[in-house]
Image (cartoon, rainbow, N blue to C red; front, top):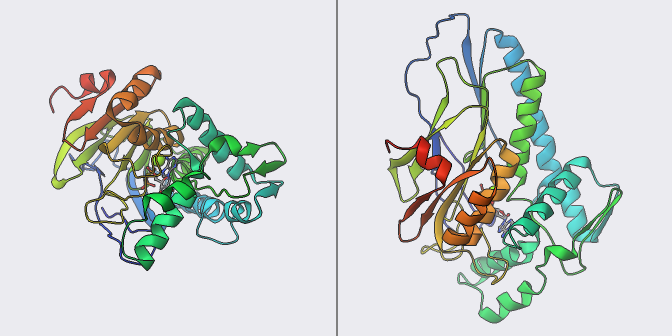
Length: 339
Ligand code: ADP
Ligand code: MG
């Protein structure tokens, strides 16, 4: 399995091709019911690889459903991408006020603000000016921005200045937002919705680190291996998925400097990248919440992150610190007795 991992900028940045989570291909794909086939398709979208795997006795229906799901993901990308100039999100970032916003944009911003409140501001979509500063600094000077430069951009970061109404979204005049921490999970959920509408009951939608299972597969649960972020030959644990989702946020995904001190997940309180953890993994019933929560927990760090996980019913998590300490939430400890 492959994953695209490169930075948003083209300057002196580091890219890595790796994947924290890979589906373990254990057992055979020969099923008791031999009419069931496995259909798996991949496409590059939203700056990552999406793979949809379906088990079905109606391969044509599966192909149609997968194609429809991919189209929906492309549509979401064209609306929520910060890189495409005519996306609704880019228009909002330029104009600061957007009339009659799309449902996709409203749903994502509303959920993002919900997680900002829940995480006491650790999740904050208004960090885009800081990411732009990192981009500029590493491209132009090939070095990190100064503390002064960071503080100047930090004044723009405040999710409380994002006002969303049914017919209008407003951000501060100096602000811009990114949905990079949540939109992939949304796209995964939308893909699952489409598959379900086509009466598919066994599928896995995988957006390289954001995964959602629809039901089980013929031989049972989907076993997902969580690779060791610093040693991809090893895996840390296996997470069984049965109609639920897993999402991982990590510092090794997109970073600017070799020490990974400057990477794509920003602590909105300091303007620097969050450096307490190597990765934060969330398991819950849907990919949308899993995506936002994994980013939030990554920023919160070990203690506050685990506290948030344990406070949320139906949410489990696994955290790896820079010191290589591995912490599991109470529900995951039970699942992973043997590893
Ligand atoms: P990935 O997109 O690599 O799977 P994440 O889901 O953790 O990883 O999202 C990281 C992205 O989230 C960043 O590229 C950026 O767009 C956005 N982001 C960075 N810091 C924050 C933050 N504190 N709160 C919300 N979004 C953030
Ligand atoms: Mg996320």
